[in-house]
Image (cartoon, rainbow, N blue to C red; front, side):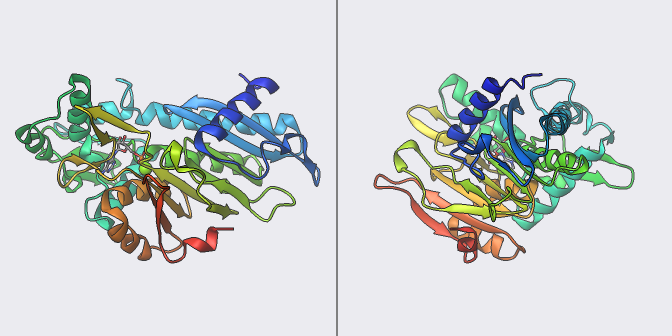
Amino acid sequence: MTWSRAQLLRGFLAAALAAGVVSGGCIKGRALASGGLKQFDSARELMGTLVTITIWAPAQEIAREAGEAAFARIAEIESLMSRYRAGSELSKINRRAYEESVPISDDTLAVLGLALEHGRLSDGAFDVSMAPLGKLWKSAAGSGRAPGASAIEKARACVGYVNIALDEKKRTVRFLKPGMEIDLGGIAKGYAVDQALAELRRRGITAALVNAGGDIATMGRPPEAKTWRVGIQKPNRRSGRLPEVVLLTTGAVATSGDYERFVEIGGERYSHIIDPRTGMPVKSMSSVTVIAPDAATADILATACSVLGPKRGVELTAQLANVEVMYAIAAEDGPAVVKSQGFDKYVE
Ligand code: AMP
Ligand code: MG
């Protein structure tokens, strides 16, 4: 357990700076006590990113126990859904689901259900079966050569969320085509953040913020503040601070496709987000921020909207209740911003 004051603060500050997130006066407000509640910040490396948790609680022991349980819940989800662990449930699905129906946990069932629903909603822009394309582009980055058209076509033939058969009653998953694999990288962090918050709620916490590398969910609000304040990630270091500050009480925000996450092949920059319909990485170097009632939805839609681009992304979110999107498209003279109609409701 690493809850020493110095470590906690250092971890939290690093995360806050890296993600451009400042919440509820966290950084200066650590010593603040309000209405009998104090702020406790902690950070841990999970799911390949820095996860920070801010809890308002009456005593350190209460915050510590709740925080530990929340981190343990995230670790549990990581062990199910990691594609880097041979023993994860995801790895087992990818090895076996074409041959037979594979029984899955409630968590994986919930995540796959959400993924398929949003696959349909986004017309295939969000597709967890894009893994063969993800692998192809990753190995291309390793070799320094972009894949050829025939390799892309071959991988693309194995991609298609409609060929994932999820049996909600039997709690199993099966692939309908050979060569299929799934990758939950566009959704698992958001789901884990929601689950961490739910764990805190079960333990009596009423005000908290969980941030997994830009996938953020909040509950309640800090005492004496009307809302949590969340700074939005910049599309690149040169673009300065975006003016927008999202104000949330209970809700979620996720940012995808930031300018710094890409692979370089032959001098070209390729995003880690792939358009499953073309097999090509998303071109425009922008960051996409989605506000939604929960972090799993925000996470999915930030990825989906990166694929769809501003026009179709705004159209998609307009169909969904309490969902807003903002694109910050990197440009030499600062980011060009495109927002859905209701986004400004969340801006100070
Ligand atoms: P995020 O950072 O949430 O936008 O998620 C990006 C990750 O989602 C990538 O690293 C892949 O693991 C996965 N991914 C990439 N493209 C897609 C897509 N079109 N649909 C679903 N998941 C994707
Ligand atoms: Mg995402």
